[in-house]
Amino acid sequence: MTQIVVVTGGLRQPSSTRLLADRIDAAVRAELGRSGLPVTSSFVELRPLGRAIMDAMLTGFAVPELEFAFETVAAADGVIAVTPAFNASYSGLFKSFFDVLPAETLADMPILIAASGGTDRHSLVLEHALRPMFSYLHAIVSPTGVYAATDDFGGQARASGLAVRIQKAAADFVRLMTACGTRTPRDTFNEELDEMTRLLADRQPGPSSGHVED
Image (cartoon, rainbow, N blue to C red; front, side, top):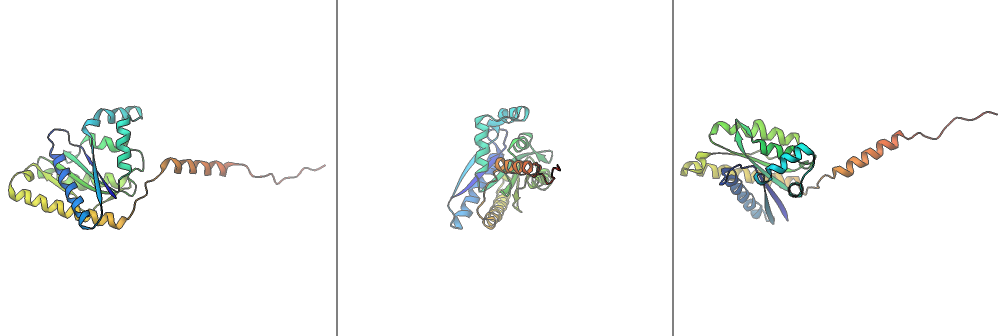
């Protein structure tokens, strides 16, 4: 069973960010279905986790609700990440979640990036902010992202254009996931433990080669 996790950073209710996330999720699930792959999807809504995310930044510890969100993302076969855009960048809440997400959680993870904003002027958020951040986190970012301005949810022509962009992004994302194959999550704790054990073993003194004269 292919597991898709949608991380959405909408700050208001109702949220155009969540609306965009719902449409992309539906398109990806439909595309996987056409490929004969069974799929389930779940959402990680960041707005209810805002206080927990900030506490984790200040204390270094995550409450159970935030830990559950971390585990949900780590267990995914692919992630759809959707943020509202502010001044051509991601929201602070969205960035903060990925700042406190345990290291290497997204390593080798296929990711589809998307953003919503008031005008088309924010569309550069995909290439100038989201793609570099997820590449830094060692994710495999799908080549086609989705940006939706407020007008894309209005008139028929704009809505039709958005639907075409979502379908193209979903198709590219599914091809990427198929090419990547089964993902094995990184066990960073045991990797670090093994590395520490190796370093300590290298520092152990070897047997003495000297001799004692009478």
